Image 1 (cartoon, rainbow, N blue to C red):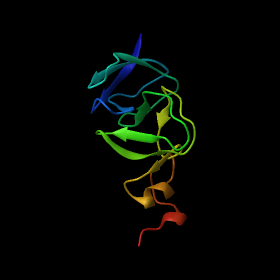
Image 2: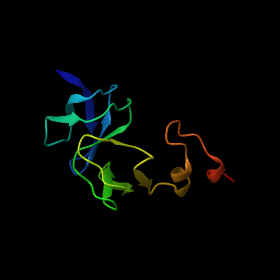
Image 3: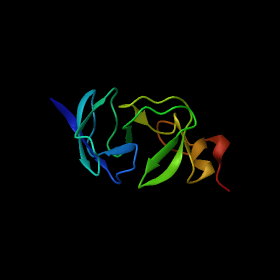
Length: 111
């Protein structure tokens, strides 16, 4: 049984974006993925990222066909990718946001 759907924006992406709340289990991939399905290894919130491949610490995380950040730890295929295991290359301040809420922390007070 499918746990939900995720969308791959570009054929070179190594992440997909959850279109629904994902539970552990099979996820249908839509868009530019060479794969039809992937197994989610944990619950993933809608609009968050799921890894399409195993990534080592320091590996590029690719979305939109561009590097959006680097893995800050090893990430397995099917795992949730978010602030707890991704170092963003969009904005250095994003690395100081709260892992659960995305709200600024004292370390990342915007000036």
